[in-house]
Length: 266
Ligand code: MF3
Ligand code: CO
Ligand code: CO
Image (cartoon, rainbow, N blue to C red; front, side, top):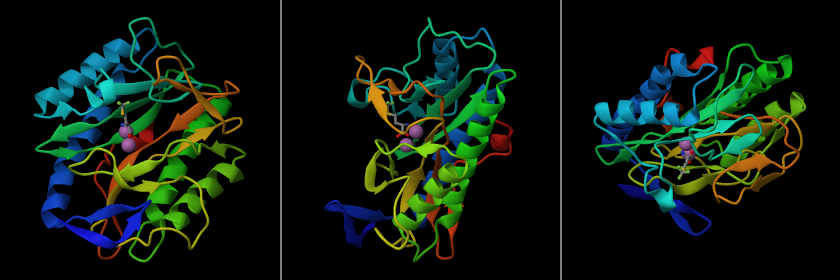
């Protein structure tokens, strides 16, 4: 593996070769398949711990290991974030999904030494008009970010495009968490901010691999992390939705490693 001549906050940015792309296709496929698999289980009455256990079983059966287990002391195979939980929701037997909830499930299977990182926000039964619109807009924000990726574009272009989608819908894009380089390393350079100024920041080069994972809030963008040091919620308790893909910069554009046929049915 080579590195870019550019750095991000002083850290080298990997440039992956074809073997890296082949490995990311395999890891990304397992992440996408896990989220497809869990989709019909996301129903009123199920606990987030039960969903986590199903995700773990699926990832292991596929020959991967949930990279989140043991990561900085985290103990679960997924993060499951319900309603006003922005990210890093901790699965619990006491957290039962109810009709009208929106719930993000984020999985990172480690397969053959490579990380496939993806999340989707699901609707539990029928949801409010606002919740449905927030989920759709979060997906659109992620995809607009993905479609901005090509050699010569900048990470500022990506962030600006994402935040413009949030703004147009009168939502906010969370600034306290970002996408990240991904590959053999779970969280690598560069940092992929979901806001920014077009024409600024790292210039994208073929071989860069990273996630795009915007969190959109229905209210203010401010968040706070609870006493468990993981669960992060909106300060104003407004709803939040997130989607995440792992992508690679190709010679001509972008390759999504974690897409599936089912993903738009969230
Ligand atoms: N999958 C998350 C991300 O998108 C990271 C979860 S780390 C954990 O980067 F420890 F909280 F699981
Ligand atoms: Co990620
Ligand atoms: Co993730």
